[in-house]
Image (cartoon, rainbow, N blue to C red; front, side, top):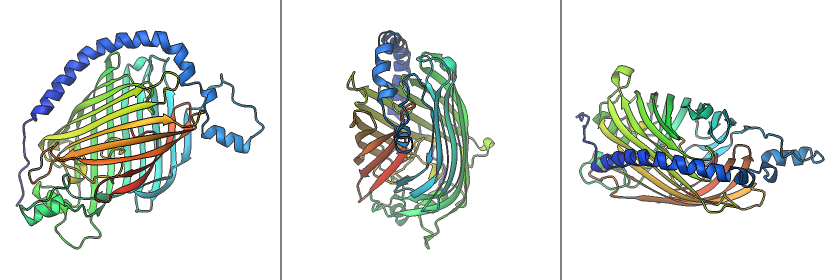
Length: 441
């Protein structure tokens, strides 16, 4: 029997969050503008030398030069380092297996500093041992003076998506179908599909660091199949049948409305500052979406530098959440582990290990230098995630932890680009090695 889409009122905590967010932004925007201006005036000259004295830092470019051109004179401190990194796209984590490909990452300030944030872009083509073929282009561009911010991505992929059921791992005695859907033992499945995504958002700065924006997102999946299952009763099939989605494929296309506030000193690896992005996604059938849906999302990040002389000592905090308000969201588009914009949350678990119509994630990370020349540094981290399910488990009722540590190799000192090597643990025997470029957040 097909379930009708559920329309629920905005939870009280979300109403409170939106209200507090708006009040905080209106007050903090003015206060932080004044303090930021004063701070920049006092610290720009001194901290520019201490924080980003590139001549004192050592990255992969220096290593290659020392190996192949050992007699060449050292780079001049005046010489501007390149903001482009082209590397083999070698990665590994439990979600994708082992990956090989090529990747290019670029970073450049398009206006004068410190009045313009760094713009970053990346592109990659890769193939993995789990049969995933992936191509993407993404960008986060700030025009001179931060008047506009453009964020977008294009993805075309043949994917294999891990599936561990719905919810946070609670058992169900309501029905055999609910027991399969909640999957309390976290037995893994794999869903093969073709995936296409086009997303673009444009933000206009209305005050120092404060942006309002809108955009569109098209998420299309075709040829969805669980090739290893002989049973018709799988979490994906049960959920799709309940909410009227075709098992073979669907579209989730909608409008995006966001507000963003940022004071981060660097988009790749911040030493200080704050980043907030909150908004609504409105999936619409007139845009080709299979179902209508309304979803609220919020992304909050805060960075605390612990040292004036070594600002790389950083405590970083991240909270990301997505909450369905009405309508129906396709199973593979539900928020969950590593379903944030960069697919980096939930280290210790594979993509989608926990998911629900309501999902919240928090993480704290300590970052610290190891070598004086900044070539090698390290991190430790701890995270918690929570989700609802179809058998009565509410958001924030049950939590699942993850934790780990890792090393950082400075790939491009001009853009603070790091190669990240992490090992993390979770529950249910989940663990894995996570290799990527740039910090998780």
